Length: 236
Image 1 (tube, rainbow, N blue to C red):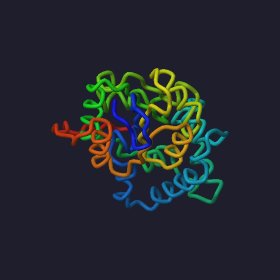
Image 2 (image 1 turned 45 degrees about the vertical axis):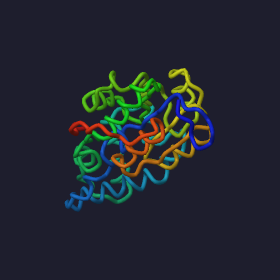
Image 3 (image 1 turned 120 degrees about the vertical axis):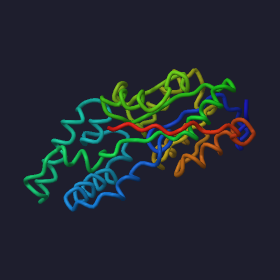
Image 4 (image 1 turned 135 degrees about the vertical axis):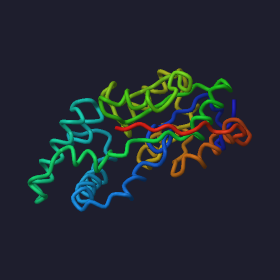
């Protein structure tokens, strides 16, 4: 198996969903021009920046991703907090959901192809995602999951979320690979930093098309030669 720059032999690769196996998150936000939706999005992103990096907690973001509340409950609570903070009292939870997730996710064909090549070279592969209880319908609609991954760890199903070290350890245990033998790819710095503390080789993904080539080069020692398959998209 490929040896990372640290000198450790790698046997497994763990990939995030949003922003890694899909096009960058938030790209559709640039097309929002409705003032109310923009204000709701700002409110959500302020929450995200304040608490998302915490491994656990009682915030609605944490509860949604550990399966304690549904998407509907999450957006009901979000709009209630928005109104309490001085927002439009007539706001609807569906409007908030549209502002945050309205354009869904689009799969990255280049990264799908990279994972297929990596798995074909006998690396153990896993999908590790922070997602809500309805998340399985999302990742199964987007990706040929059973073909690409030996293991899927869904935060809402296991009651843990990144960057809690326990969810990385659980993923490695299910893969049958030690953390120091794993590559981990994620778009968020807090998750990459957490994985690194366990000894994983890490890549922060800002552009999944470019990082797909980097993954293949690191693990297979060559450029990604195959044509990426067409992208697929799914509404959230």
